Length: 424
Image 1: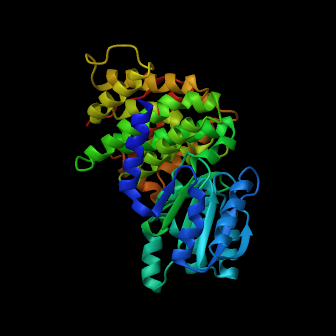
Image 2 (image 1 turned 90 degrees about the vertical axis):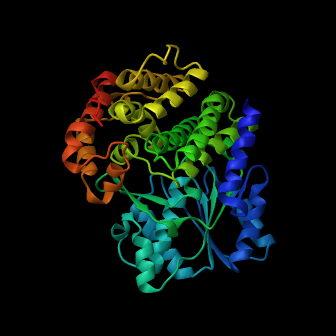
């Protein structure tokens, strides 16, 4: 089954990005080709820790194709602190490259996206949090961003394929989101083999991030997009469930790394079709104690119960997939509504336990009730309203304390049955 899923995922990605995305073994050779199509000089942004070898290969490819590598500068720290965005923006302004080449995981790629906007448009990053504000400013100032080539080194966020840039204010511990079509990298490259060097925790976090993207988009999908998103989740979720144990136990397994990379890429494809919702919203308030993927993965089963009455077809398909891999053993056909959601949520948690991921907020080191307060306050922030509106049952700011509050209280205790179920 694995080979069929891999072929199906490859076909979906080719249909999604065509010749603008090079993925799989040997893909790094394409960086120089892509850059030569877009300009003559490049600023390379990438960390020189575990991804040093990838950065060096990227520079070699650029040199081979006659690109002037003006400078190579460090990427971003985890969760994209705002100060890294400002530093990179200064480098872009100082060097004026034709092309930006971002080499790294989601944090570095997100930083380069936001930094490109700041370098061209000026001002504070705060002005761009929300949807479409970069494009509006570009139009008003008759400006354009330098093209970005995103070279991914981690299978997780799909940042190399998407319009999202997550930025963290380290003073408050709160993450916020820029959503803008202008931020989509014009070219992307991902050799899945490079992920073999990442840690076990990063691998697990990435798998959970990919599953969260697929699940949240599927849960909130509209009728018109249902067939495509259903296809993405019936290919992407099995890839991640089937191959997660393989890459965790055998980090250098090339088939497993390819499968997980493809699965998380399909998650990136999904969030270009529809939006994420509850789990992603709350994860922005947990950046000081949990990775993004881990926080989202933990919370999604609880949101499945909250929205049970509105998403029964999606829950049935999710349940079928988790049951196929042995994470749900009870008969689901006789269940509906809340009872179905509780069973599917339990199956999602069983998978997380199988890979050593937490299933309750109190299992996160340093979690306190202050995180719940922060999450509830953030959920009422107008800049994050898109997440409330993307929910299967749209939630108003006035409903946050009741609905989202019940999710967080249940997640603290690790009890799905404590979540209230909203009525359609």
